[in-house]
Image 1 (tube, rainbow, N blue to C red):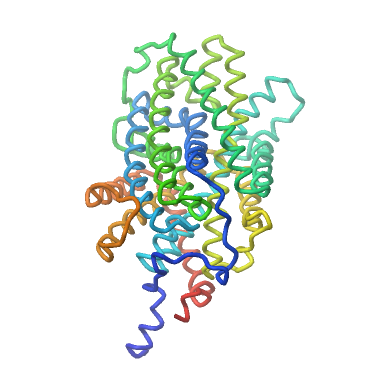
Image 2 (cartoon, rainbow, N blue to C red):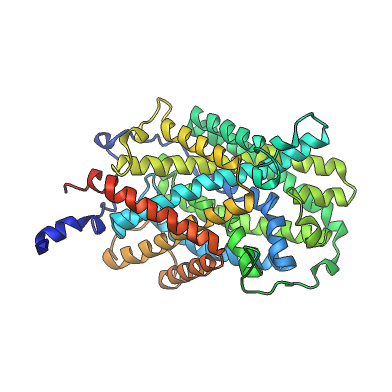
Length: 478
């Protein structure tokens, strides 16, 4: 049996922490270049949040909640708003790559940080895949409308009756190539495409509002409020909220860009909070317009619901333009999350928890190795798995990260109450617990299959940590 001292040394990996003020130094590995300002960060947030959630998951969620999907959007947005306030405080305190992984490392210990980092790897990779599948739905619609000779087996994955979702694979690899060009360059491309996206959504609302029919909102909540499972899916307002939660959490990708932000103490707060407020408003308006123009049980069956609604209104040209805008602009979501994934990988590798080769930075200031790795994995998943399955699994990882960030904020308030904070979460002892409880409730609203897979993923991660990362951590000898 180990003596108390030896046992304490053996178990130190549970409690060892990085200093809150720890910054990347030249000796720690290459540092990412600071090239972004607050307009880039707001665009990153909007680019990530306004995407598959509004163009595709609006239909999926409406099929689970009926017209009450509007309430689902409000619930998911409220939970994310609490989490966003916690992220804003931690991101301005610790402006380096890693997001919730880095916050956990400084406050909750290395073992928790590993679990969160491992969960973020799951989240970001699956989001990239999910959006690629959502993009493919619109791209395939345009391909069929143009009567191109592309076999249907190459436009959908095996579970959707096809062989491989080739458009989804294609877009994931294209975005990977754009990100390799450079951070500022890819952020500029994102900014332009976000503007295209917002103009298209404004056009959708303008065209559908004249056809608004209040009868489409009755019955308002045909599947009830709470989440209940049928055929492997969770129905009801909360069941839909657990799925469309996926649509809101792009703001956490902003925090992964902290190290590349010129003025993090100001710009990160504007980017995180500003993008959340703007996007919640947009979601509510677009969902209301879609439901008013078409019964939920009609457009929810389409893989391109907004374009479908316009076709139902005899607006084929507008439908094609909306689909075209989705095809053009939805890759911004893939871009932002692939950006975030590579930065989490980078931070974990720089800390010694993953192979050091993953922390290499190209001459353009881009972690090229992990960007390529992320892109290839996302492309493989997108080619074979349906959207709803990917979105559910991605949500599980995100909810874990949000819970950890809420705990990190409160733990640091206790441990270092006098620490200068560029941004302070208001009513932290209300906002923090509310965000944590909301995330826990949404987690229980996910399907049993999703929760089991998430548990297996983290069990595998713990084995990797104990056998490889624990002794290679830079803090192992401290």
